[in-house]
Image (cartoon, rainbow, N blue to C red):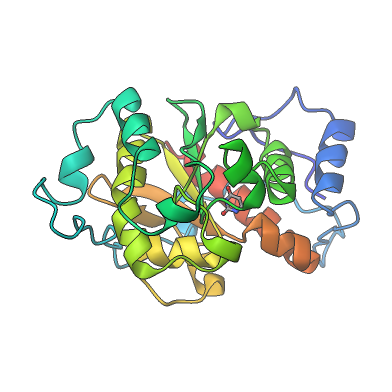
Length: 267
Ligand code: URA
């Protein structure tokens, strides 16, 4: 297991003890995951590769297409949100009726965390517990997300966490394209306000919608994408809910987290 951890800022993580790291990785289900090099059988070291060694997605993804609601006299999409501060944005989201999910939600789930975070984690949509509590990633998937972040030296409070959709789709069905389009300006404004150095997008649906692609998650991970006009570096990994169902992919998620940390360390 990687013992020479680095902080997201790229420095050696001297303050995280081996025992603590083991504890975090155990929470990820990776306590017995050891990669051995053929020559030395030494544990794999999570060192940042040269910048050129990190593949960069060649085609810059376009931001999600935005549109206004039907019969909406206001400016379309992101133009409506572009001037909002945090308070105004939160109020607009809480009162939103742009799509049918407003009829079935308990409440909107805005986002949580450090408003000037270097890392922004983006998920798909609230689930049942998030819908009840009004905070993203508070259920079992949220616990695993917290462990994933801790494994790379980040506390939940250090990052900003939001979803592509602010309302729960009934029975956790996949978001409709129209719901994504109506809700995206809110996320885009959150990104513009936080100004993250890195976006970590969890799960196929959020990744495909944000990057406007049908590519499978396996092809989207381990690349640096660029999101939106400000080309925020964006890294994709598995959704923690998926990892709960398919723990074998936790090792790949760990690779993605280390990759994201390398990208973020580049500044
Ligand atoms: N899954 C998500 O994508 N977001 C949440 O907030 C909870 C579960």
